[in-house]
Length: 244
Ligand SMILES: Nc1ncnc2c1ncn2[C@@H]1O[C@H](COP(=O)(O)OP(=O)(O)O)[C@@H](O)[C@H]1O
Ligand SMILES: [Mg+2]
Image (cartoon, rainbow, N blue to C red; front, side, top):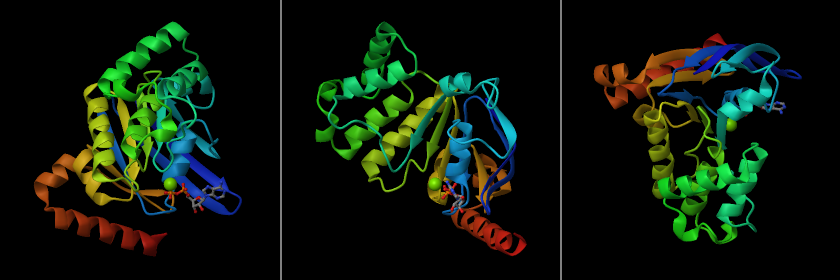
């Protein structure tokens, strides 16, 4: 469970987030939709303890963001879309073992978990090859495995679909669905209405740092056509433009 309570963030003159509040239940996928500069990455960085909020707080699996950052980090797996963040000169196994040790896992637990992940994501064939020689899809799987090597209960994906071909994109969305089936709390941000409509349970629309709409994706899909949902969102953001 992720609880986000009134988070604001000011960078010098820029109000990047204004009083952002929402929850993510266990087994729920929340899609965070927003244009470039809406504040999606800033929110992800705050929830993962990389940035401190100007005000507000959050709890991840019952741990308080501000007073228990270590516990929060153990509860969170984060993947930033455009960068895989792996060491090209190391093998996949070495990369995963390194991140497991950074997360405080013993080498015994780490090697057990790495074998498990290699089976889940089917990378046994190349686990002992250097990452520098991998295709984008192969790197994608290792990057995902790296993000969840410590088996976190909350998973954050910041624009995981940006610039991916259909194969790498399928790997990501299969992973998101698997995480839901495993009862994780998932937030993925995107500027693609399509992906959020297809893969999330709830959509949170953020515009210039503010939440302007939250809706149940399943309900909307029953009520409206794809085209109508696009129009609703487009109008919302245009109105937001006038109100902000
Ligand atoms: N480190 C920073 N210093 C100053 N301004 C920043 C910084 N990071 C983000 N911003 C600003 O905050 C706003 C939100 O940015 P960001 O969270 O990256 O948006 P998104 O990920 O939705 O594209 C933007 O106006 C951006 O310029
Ligand atoms: Mg971003």
